[in-house]
Image (cartoon, rainbow, N blue to C red; front, top):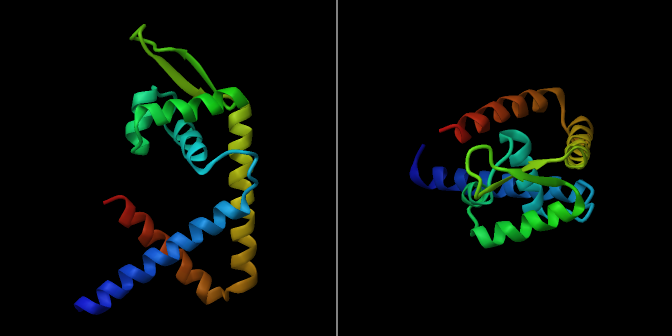
Length: 143
């Protein structure tokens, strides 16, 4: 693909993905959970218990910032701390059952909105294109 066309594709795709992500966040119930807190909950759900330092590295924030995020989640009962299995100086944080329920509700709201939007605003041919695009986007993120 020529230079300018490639640049435009990159710009358009980045803008579209950004708009979609913002809309998905807007469609999910707030429940007082910030986007950063949601990201931490999703990571704990996907990857399992983790230390503050590991979460900070994964989310590209300072450990001090992650401590504040985890404290807020712990206060809400969304995460719980326990002793590190091999290092007594550390603790690990895990999602609680309440945290799993909150995360499931957020995901359900996003999926419901997207499902309705796709059903009401796209044709079957466009839905096939979206399916192909989703596979391509997933492949791009795995590189």
